[in-house]
Image (cartoon, rainbow, N blue to C red; front, side, top):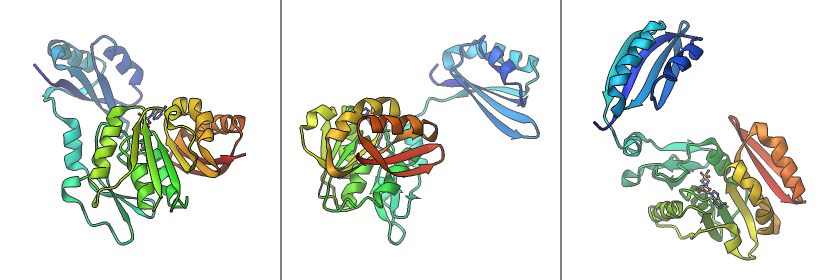
Amino acid sequence: MAGYIVVKCGLAAGRDEVLAEVLSEFQVLGAQIETIGRGLTSVLVYAPASEAASTQELARSLAAVGATDVTVEWLADRDWLDEYRRQAQPFSVGTRWWVDPVPGSVSLPPCGRIPLVVEPSCAFGSGSHESTQLMLCHLEVLEVENRLVLDVGTGSGILALAAHRLGANRVVGLDVDSRAVFVARRTLRRQIPPVSVLLVAGTLGGLGGRAFDAVLCNVLWETQQGLLADLRRLLAQSGSLVLAGFLKSEEEEVVAELEAVHLAVSGRRELGDWLLLEARHG
Ligand SMILES: C[S@@+](CC[C@H](N)C(=O)[O-])C[C@H]1O[C@@H](n2cnc3c(N)ncnc32)[C@H](O)[C@@H]1O
């Protein structure tokens, strides 16, 4: 049988350890716990369909530790991405952007906003994550018009597209994941009119010695750390390096690593737990 089994129940708040103990006895995929008020949580436990028999036992074990309204249901296997696409709505980011996830029926952006048509896909960069939004907001003030821009870790291509929309002279989008480059190419072709950006599948080492006026890099900090020296090498003497992909709690470490490669912080913004730093040659 394809699909999943979901066991639903209510549980008194603060019983997380008991719940974890019960779940450790079964082959479950994960659990979703939400507070629903008055010291009560709603618990959803997901298991593969092959575990249908043992989930009945799981339901009894949950009831034995005080869970209420325990039910066991079969959940059909669905194309979750397709589902998400159908529900996705256009949304604003910053003061200038209008991110539209529906290429088939593009909406009219509110006055003054620039449309970025980005269909949800397997590549990161739908525009909904804080790190992407920080980059989009910073692009608004970066003055990339007629400049040469490098977008490292282009993912869906959303930042490369935004830089192009702001009048960058030339934009290069780079990603180590060739599937992301494929998605980015599709993103750029879906704009009206289609947008031309040079997309490269590979690493920074393959870009040669060209210096960029703005280098954007929204890549997880663990990866980005190892890229800093190369990012600096590719940055024009008066250029701006814009980094996101780390948490506010990592700021001290990020600043120290930047200083270690002679980059000085020249800008900062935050959104939720996420942080963006702009740096220049020190
Ligand atoms: C967090 S996503 C960013 C996507 C998009 N630029 C955005 O801001 O939403 C990071 C991307 O970096 C790519 N990546 C990871 N390591 C990389 C590297 N060393 N060089 C280039 N791209 C890399 C990943 O494949 C992924 O597509």
